[in-house]
Image 1 (tube, rainbow, N blue to C red):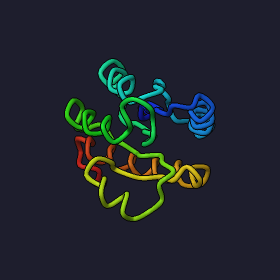
Image 2 (cartoon, helix red, strand yellow):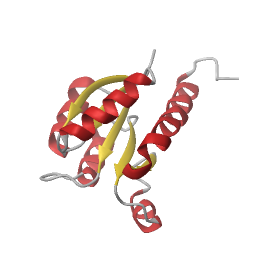
Image 3 (tube, helix red, strand yellow):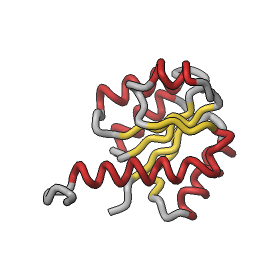
Image 4 (cartoon, rainbow, N blue to C red):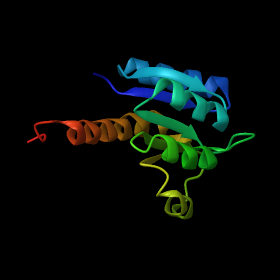
Length: 131
């Protein structure tokens, strides 16, 4: 069963672009959200396997949302999709996210990051042990 992915970004064009990229690569986008609070509501409702989470959003930002998502759905994988590209940002938030993809690199880096996460998730849930 393909991983269920929630796309969270405050810009509709960004969500649409990411959705198109994911669907072209045969990923299952189960929903979208435009801010952190809506992301939390959608995580509760849709139970996605992976949340692609923008960091800079009005209202509740992605870091605050990631913290709450970790509390309500600890097995859900989180990928920050961000304009921040510095090591300081990734090291400061590494406990909240399973991966980071710079928006400027999303076209080339998002699919490999998702494949790695999904592959690791499937191995973790394989009743035979994945060997």
